[in-house]
Length: 67
Image (tube, rainbow, N blue to C red; front, top):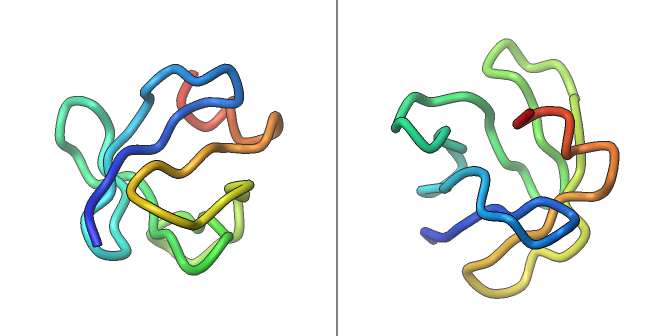
């Protein structure tokens, strides 16, 4: 599945294709597994609030990942 990741305020901060999360410049940054966001090294770093549809919203703690 492909879609967008938005901050807790609704600002578009990243895109995802499959399980890979890409920054707005197109570089792979994280992996998305269910509601969890992991560094490419496998470390858990954040969560999304909702996983339905093509838009995933970060929780407030996850906003810092895309500052």
